Image (tube, rainbow, N blue to C red):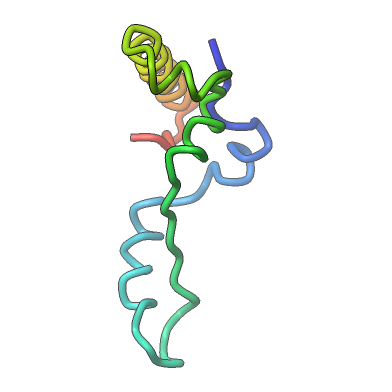
Length: 96
């Protein structure tokens, strides 16, 4: 099984209300100085995602459907385990 998120990141963001963060982000996009903070954006491309989940061969990923499907299944399982661990600790999982 692969680690999806570094332990330090999880610790630093344990109290982060992700939904509230993105709700607050909408008014922050306005071109004005009357906003709570700078707007955030997150647009990972395929290379970022493949590195994040630890795909050893991008060439094989794009050329071998069975390999790609197996990686997708492994990542989904890892995310489900992360959610279960977060719930067991009484916290909110970052990944939904």
